[in-house]
Amino acid sequence: MSSAKRIMIIDDDENIRTLLTDLLESNGFEVELAEDGLEGMEKLKSQSVDLILIDIRLPYVSGIGLVRIAKQHQPGTPIICMTGYGSSPESIAEEECVGAVLSKPFKTQELMDAIDRLLK
Image 1 (cartoon, rainbow, N blue to C red):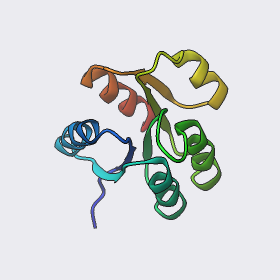
Image 2: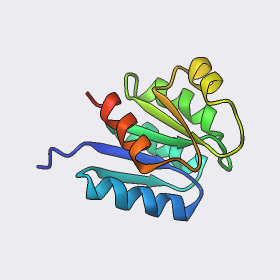
Image 3: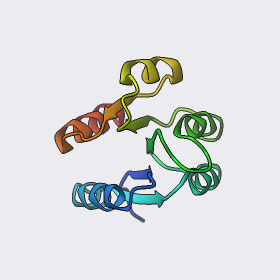
């Protein structure tokens, strides 16, 4: 049985999902993917993960809605929100009590630092 940490990526941009999957798998993580808010919601309710990466702007169910669902179904699981739409990262983090908010485009080291900090 693998002891690798599992990270769920919920993002509707296929390029972002692919880049993040490659980065995380090359750093020893297992990756679970969802390509929209509805799929993300179903997976959050049925699959346990160690960390969740959520795009704020998603079809069907918003990223903020998913943060609330994740807190209900996976309390204590760290969440990193990603946004490319000028939302204030600080206000999202404060309002939703997430571990980190990254503005797209972000540096891979910025993401890895946030993951390392949240999974300690």
